[in-house]
Image (cartoon, rainbow, N blue to C red; front, side, top):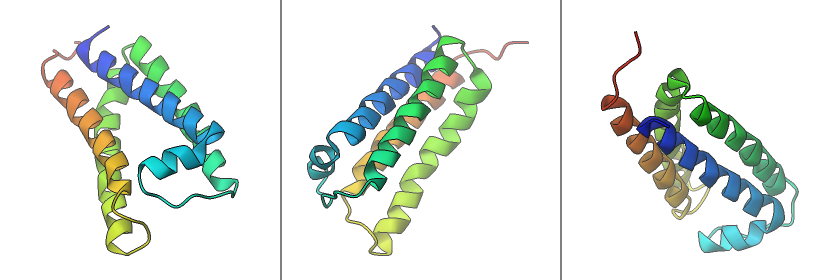
Length: 121
């Protein structure tokens, strides 16, 4: 597995674990980040979506899908911008930015790995 694939694979595992946590024990995870508890179904729907999204990352990594890795860098890096806007608008507390930092760190890891790899011809 290439270094970029490895970074995407581990991000997929992070998504898998986060999705499972949001499906099975959402308030525990929300509490860790200082977010309000909820009994509404939306948080479990988000968990399901994150869990399903993890499959894309894991399969892309196992098949070394570089175009996916490249696009994921931009998309994951943008998460913190959206979260910062939500925090700035007072829609949510600053602890949400911790999730965004994880996405940004993963994106930077993948970007660094991609820069060190030659493009296939």
